[in-house]
Length: 239
Image (cartoon, rainbow, N blue to C red; front, side):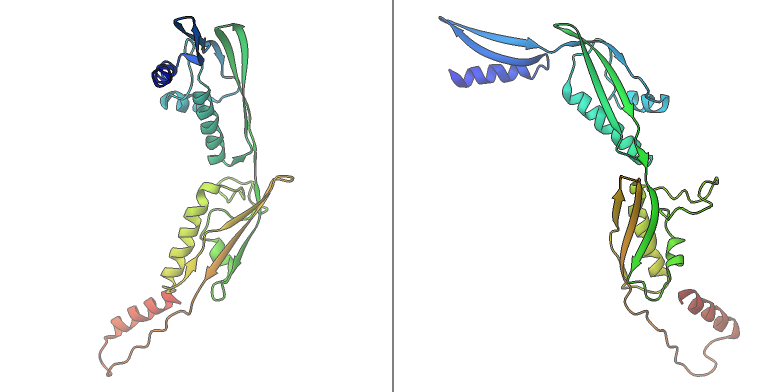
């Protein structure tokens, strides 16, 4: 029964112990030929930082000695490490998983990481900002171009962090709203990266729309002097 054979192979495969499974008929006997997955005899974490090791252990992503080798688990490990370094601003990090056969059923693993490079922001362009100048907008975002002062502590580093691009767009959108541009739209930024010299340019497209004008009409004496001062301050804030 072909269906039952397929189900049996699937059940054996789902145990996670076998690399390949093949059903062979010998006379009236059905034989399952199974190639076992190797056991991890030893694992070297090479140049993994202690902080990263701790995170991997907490998330149960770091394989242990005595475990059955799982390609899927090591693929997930590689992806997480790449994302980890990307969140730190390092691009093109390379993770190598070196396997050495000790016996037909045992292997040694060595994890080697070549950390990528950070991208330096050369320029941030704004298109469509007719009423608010570039310097004002730059003050609202974290991904700003590198300057002479970027090497000093507590200053803008000038290095690209893609995870902050979303919050940068939101900050610009809120800035426009607070300035009275209720119909303004700040679109998702486009980033152009050059991996030959590890530089980046960020482009923002902005639809400002016309800023509303408030005209107060009323008989003399409607507002006290104090109220008029507060109203003037609010109008100045919205400019």
